[in-house]
Length: 72
Image (cartoon, rainbow, N blue to C red; front, side, top):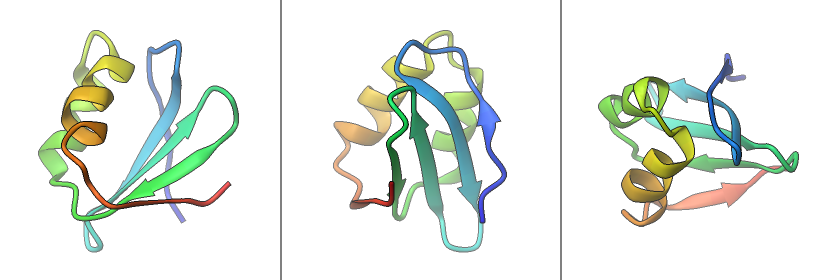
């Protein structure tokens, strides 16, 4: 189970991170949720501190091609 942190974004509602599994959990504003594998912790921290969490996510996670699964 992930402990989610809400972020400032029009597309991303909240993110969570599992340090052991290196899995990033992303809950979007539309209610969908995805888990991204092998994501470095600094990418998670970057989302938390970015001016635009959605923009950071797109550049550093989505465009980077991390494997993912939709869980909800």
